Image (spheres, rainbow, N blue to C red):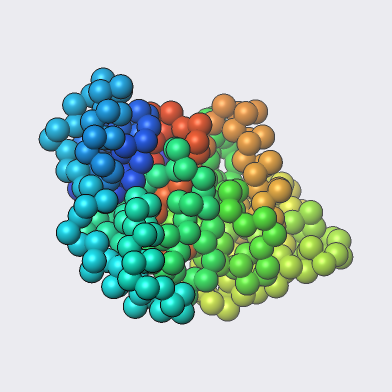
Length: 330
């Protein structure tokens, strides 16, 4: 069974409710919602003004009359949502009217639906900037216990690959944090391992990547990776992790044995934690283009409940698969 089959089978089993805050904004989103429902991957909850949803559906050439729809501008729960927001975010010291104003944004409304368990996950970002997707959920849904950092990962499915991960790897963080601290890097590693286990039944083997392997170079950037590795071991002794490792030492067994003899991870890693966003983003795109592999993501991690951001260039199929990933994570 390939990775996508694993994800969609999990989604089918779980039949989760996925909020779609851009249902009235983009034809790709509505087409993907239709596909998600038709494939049985999840139950999409379309959020938006009915007239907007109907207009986009007509433009997309799809019928969504059988899908659940919620008008975030008139919903009878708005008053309760404003009160709840002011409890959660009391330090903002908003009036009820100011809180109500926030819920004109469908992402704030979706985040409160998720917080109150009216839905099981959120998928958006095809027509909205990443910060505007994540900010409401960070404020309302909050962070996963033990994690203080929102990050992302990609599942890289590399064809005809015989290296450490047998062609399936987690790359992180490729989309969110430009220059993580050691503490944040440890959060990224832990969250990525948990994502791998939950989403694709992986036994994670984590390599904390650097331009140095086991003291071959000395630099503050290397020190950061060493400290992050120690923090992962301290916080999650159940996770196999090693670092600092160069990329070849992490995934090529012969190189790993030579550069890091005795390492339980070297040459066998399948979760690759990059030291910063520069290297991670460049790395995943090079692998994707050089090998024509599937790069599934970004998968947002660290939040208490699943919320996922989309590339604004995402295709209908990519959006639908992301809906399935959210359902599988829920």
